[in-house]
Length: 200
Image 1 (cartoon, helix red, strand yellow):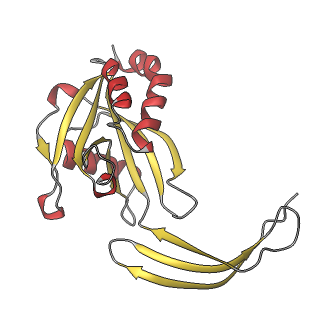
Image 2 (image 1 turned 90 degrees about the vertical axis):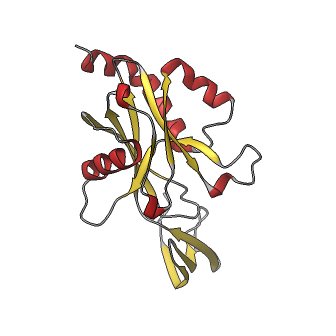
């Protein structure tokens, strides 16, 4: 059994702004025994986020938001993508507080029920950031329009999709990040249960 050990020789902050970038010099345990040579790794810190799957069991509809994202600007399909409502968790703020705040700010909707889905690392190769994925029961009949906080540069359009339309987003490459894909796979597994619980 591997004796997991990490020897951090140095940690240098390389950038501090909207995110933080640190450069580590370290050694770590090897599977064949002993320690590695000194290696350098850079780690990106931004903060833990909460992403919300907005689903209306009665209408069998999913609410997604569309907004500009610089990270996909080089991929040829435009930089406006469909996503889940999401936001960063502030110190001392509960998951439920984040969910209700972000859902209202980004979609104008009110959450009726919240259920945790999973918590996972965004990319353990180079960032400490984690995402808490949450399901929120909403009334999609009230969904639409453009939302977001202008003082934060947000310009967010709300869309309502029937469950059967989601496959088109997959095939068209309009869900380019892992979080909405994970959410839709979870919904596929839990859709019948959610409908039986929330449809009276």
